[in-house]
Length: 356
Image (cartoon, rainbow, N blue to C red; front, side):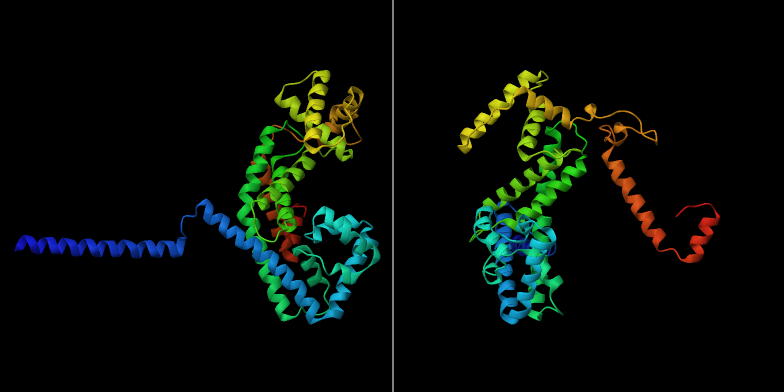
């Protein structure tokens, strides 16, 4: 009898223990979040992207319906910014989700003609919404203000959730490319800007994995542009040749210019076949000119009045990136602290020989 009673007690204890562990699991999941797998992350991102695009359309429709006159004035200001102030239609592209082909065929003619009614048909993104809010006469309608805040929050969440991808791509890019005048933080910053551009430019009826490809494509393009930046401005076609030359010289250890030229043209032939485009091979003279133009070695090395030369302005490849970031942050903090000093404190410091 005693034995049976003990078994019953054990079963009760086990039941209580199971209930207790379930309660703990519920609390942990509620407060710390469930461990997310890839499928869950994709589903969260899908909802965020689709909600963002839907709310942007809703914002546009709301301002057009609530105040047609003021919305017309804002669109007129936008046309003035692009065509008169910037004098470049392409500067309007970051404000729309429309892809390059649709932008050229529809948005560009509407901007040139000042056709506000036609321009209002196309899908705007957060950049345009921010422009509307900044240039709206008076306060935005309450419903539009709520939509603005929701859109901004959603966009920020998308950026934050994908920042690890941008940093990872930037680190990979930096490790695979030869040393340049750009620091790793420059490449990371460029990748992050590409990510934001991808989020603002992705357009589809529903979310697909193309979203990730769009963001990665924008990151890669930005990083190549940043890496290829020099004191001279090159045409995009020349930038591409320089980028290929630097990559092939590093990966294939192609130091001989004729060998490097052969590798570049092979790569360009394969690319032309894939895209079904015509190819104009690079000549040895062209390659030599471009390589010399991008190099600081070909620059004037004579010292200026301050005793500095071209190498004084070239990034040190052995400098510690982390130390530079810490130093910049300290300088910024000191600057902020100095700006908060009162007049007496500033005078005391100056009397002690501290220059502010």
